[in-house]
Length: 238
Image (cartoon, rainbow, N blue to C red; front, top):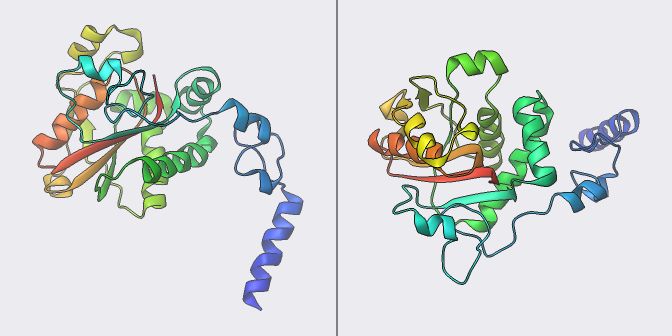
């Protein structure tokens, strides 16, 4: 009886508040999935095979993309990303990150978790978001990586810890070239509690990877703090 009661409750709820596409906010039928058909066409995921260095698309016959081949070392053991950071995915991430559209977190986070399960075999037992400095957090009102980490952790059945902290404010990375990005982010992170990460295999979460400077600094901080290994998962590859 309770089972039928729950089914009836969900049916009434869907009748009163029909499913809404989180991307365009149009009504969509449940059989079309989490988003409407038109948005699904405009949000293709990165094709396989993918580059293990950044999670993006392979652009040649080698095992890594051209950008990752120019990097001497990536400090993480694996990387997965979901979308190319352009067109509709770019607009979506900007709305989520800067526009206060936090209702997009479940959709983006679930896509990230699904892609992680499909494209990585790395062992992880802890999810950690890339943090914001308190001034930027106060200005924006939320940490987008924190929201994504909560969704990913719940989907993967892993604990989420805010193990990293920003020890100093930095300029926006998107406004800088690669060399200035590295200087800008150097020494920007610290760890909150060694016992949270000591000996753990960490899955580090952020919204976008571009040059990888921010993620590299965050990963190095986690490894210096005692993490056994770190893999990265991002929503988009810039």
